[in-house]
Length: 225
Image 1 (cartoon, rainbow, N blue to C red):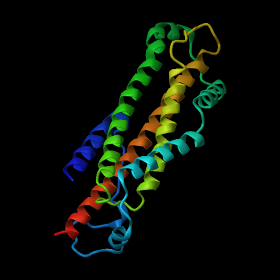
Image 2 (cartoon, one colour):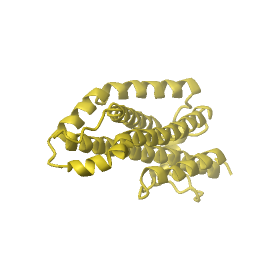
Image 3 (cartoon, rainbow, N blue to C red):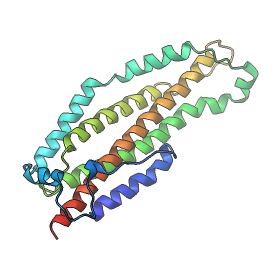
Image 4 (cartoon, one colour):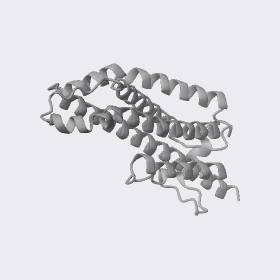
C-alpha cells in the first residue's frame, strides 16, 4: 500500500506540468476503506480468479495492440491540423512576425520537449502501477482493471500520435512575407493544444487506476483484520 501511495503522490505532483486545474480521481466502486462490513463488490472480488503476472502482462499487450488499431494515425492527425489551420482567419502582421521570428521558430520544439518530459513521467508511473498489480499474484483485485487498462492504452497511443504530429512541425522556417504564415502559426498552436489535452486525459485515467488499486488494497486490508 505504501508503494501505491508513493505512485499516487508522484502523479498528483505531475499535475502541475499538465493543467493546474485538473480534477483528480474519484473513489472507485463506492467502497469505504474505513468500513468493516463486507460490501457486495468485495464479495464479487473474492469470487474472481487470481490473475497471474503473465496474464496481466498479456492483457496489457492486447490492450496496447487494440489501441494502435483504433486510433487515428499520426500522419492523419498532422493532415487534420494542417487543414484546420489553413481555414483560420487569423492574420499576423509582417513587422511583428519579424520581431518575434526567432522565438516563434523554436516554440514548437519547446512544446514538444515539454510534452515529452511529461509523458515519460506518466509512462513510468503507469508501468509501476501495472507491475505492482501483476506481481501481486491476484492478492489485489480491481474488478474493472482490464477496462481501465484498455482505456489507458488507447489514450496513451493518442497522446503519442499527437506528439508525433507536433514534432513534424519542427524545423520549418517562418517566412513573414508568406500569406500562409498565420495558418502555420495557428497550426502550431492547435498541435500543442491537442497534445496538452491528450496528456491531461492520460494523467486523469492513470490517477483513476491508481486510486482504484489503493481503494481495493485498503478494503482487502480491512477484511483481513
